[in-house]
Amino acid sequence: MAAPSERARVPSIRDVARLAGVSHQTVSRVLNDHPSIRPETKKRVQDAIAVLDYKPNLAARALVTSRSRTIGILSATIGEFGPTSSIASIEDAARVEGYSVTTVNLPATTPEAIGDAIRQLGREQVSGIVVLAPQVRVFNVLRGMAVGVPFVSLQTASGSDGFSLSADQVDGARAVTEHLISLGHSEIVHLAGPQDWIEAESRMRGYLEALREADLPTFPPIRGDWTADFGYFAGTELARRPDFTAVFAANDLMAIGLMHGFRDAGIEVPRQVSVVGFDDIPVAAHVWPPLTTVHQDFPSLGQRAVHILLAQIRGDDVPEFGPAVPQLRLRSSSASR
Image 1 (spheres, helix red, strand yellow):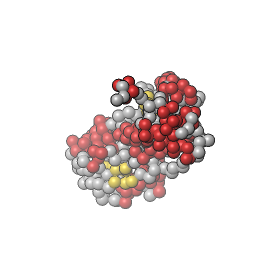
Image 2 (cartoon, rainbow, N blue to C red):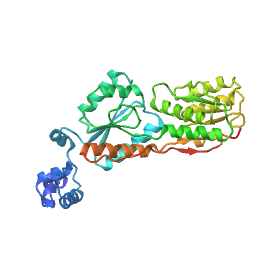
Image 3 (cartoon, one colour):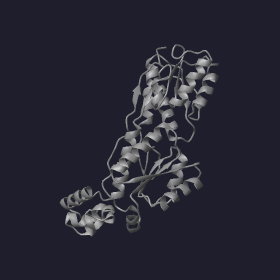
Image 4 (cartoon, rainbow, N blue to C red):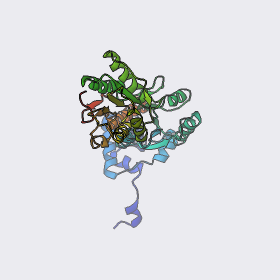
């Protein structure tokens, strides 16, 4: 009968090497994805790891490689539906590849805060970074820094100096605006997102392009802050104007608040005014009336980000992904003029 200490002993890299019939240096090379390892040798080592349930000592490996098997997330959007969904999928995809994830939230998007966040991720020896900070100024700061590791952003930012991918925000905004035009609306107000936000500018651009192509007049956009509270305020203010028949809100929360404001002001949606949003948050289908909006596949974007980042880390060819195509979700908040 084995002694308690023997039963509790954690398998070592040398145990894996003995079972696979290789040296412990070969096991180390397999763990670090060294390109010189033959496929059959790699499989024997991986089978031995599975049999022994061997868990590599990530801290020790970090001392040798100067990098941990950790992906950093730099986020200025915690709490919002889209980024939260993307972070969950990043964690899942990283775990499958044997990586852990550490997230640093930006309390502000000042150069000092961004620099502190990058230095914190550097101290944690992350192998790469996913940027979830959709303000242009964040990328202006990153462009002037020596980040030191590969990074990928989930927003398309000009001059970001890193790989970027996103849903086609312009196409989605154009599609939802064209939907309103097809219903006979010609006076369409845009409740936009904050200035300097990449998504806000892209969605406004799609809205303006659709109106221009239809040779329709444009209204000065109303700059919001993404919140339902601002949408409610905008609804009560817009209720005093008789010069529009539809509103495209740049996100669902503002659209939902807008409909609440209209209702309190005695305006019926969609009989008097049609309202559309963007993002397709889970509650959008369950408000009254159910919200017409643009669906984005946030989990898929998170998975793609991990594939791109790990390819850079490993020196492999970076997979090419076109912009994710948003899907129009037609519901009851939009109707014919």
